[in-house]
Length: 101
Image (tube, rainbow, N blue to C red; front, side):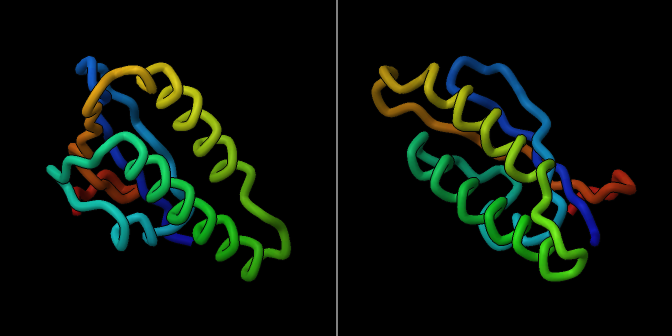
């Protein structure tokens, strides 16, 4: 499966490199896109859920990397729950080979 990484910037300016076992994240995020906190979490749930299911369909087991990444996103997002109008920016999408999308 072609894995991808998406670099995000949280409301306080910190960045996080996120993993997806599938390029499906390209259907949910665009480089430079800014998303409301809840929207970003929902898009992450959908994208990583589909990615995990694609791994399951191909290999017979759900990708724990996708579920672990989602858990990290949800934990981080919870820290900004009280920030009004919190935005998350997807800075880049890159393939496992480092090629920027």
